[in-house]
Image (cartoon, rainbow, N blue to C red; front, side, top):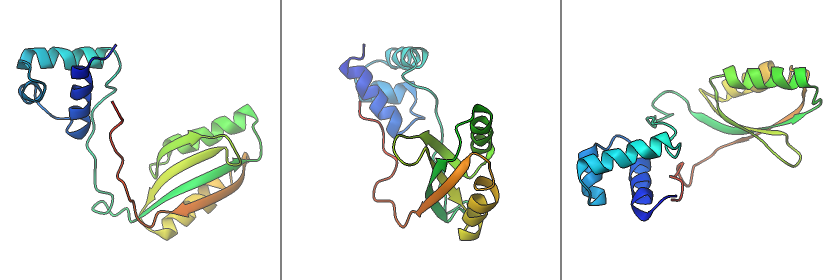
Length: 151
């Protein structure tokens, strides 16, 4: 069970993951060792799954962000596994979800340009036997950056 201090700690780490125990202690009004122990407990209990750096796609030459909806023609296990394997191994696909509704999958992708997005769709996804239809939406602007989870 999380208390108010745990929630404050999680919120602080989502905003700035590399806070030291001393900095967390100041934020939480605890000693550095108490703050460190709380962080370790939350890690051990699975509330904190890991730490990462948020990179700037544009600085990396990734100028096109898109959401790609995939509708399957077949749900034969071998073909679905093959599709999942492709999704897992393509670096352009940064996240993927299974969905209810018309589309079976939603992929979030970053590509260098429209030509690279076109290649991903027409040369990689559409030739897969399980894939019936692909629809993409190109992101024009992001109104809200990926935000921390509510705690």
